[in-house]
Length: 88
Image (tube, rainbow, N blue to C red; front, side):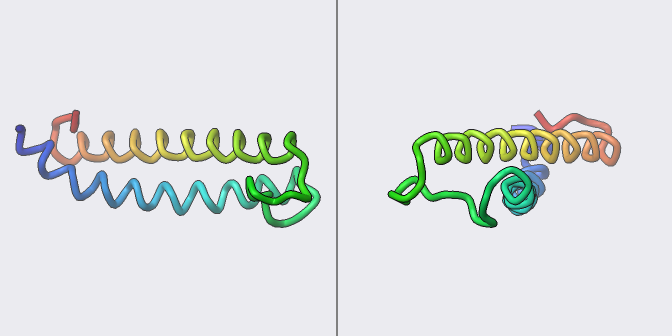
């Protein structure tokens, strides 16, 4: 295993945690804009319609994937700038 890949592991883990926090905050704000309530529905909330629950889940997944990809890509690009190698 390359030294750059080993060195990037803790950075990748930290970025993963950061992206989860950012995605959670972004989803909360997005749901406030499109939902009737501040909190997104839970899948087991019997007072919510299937459509609302599935839309919330799809939106949350899309936001999480987008934020994760952006943070991971930015971290890899920063690593290349610092070390000269891409952490594959």
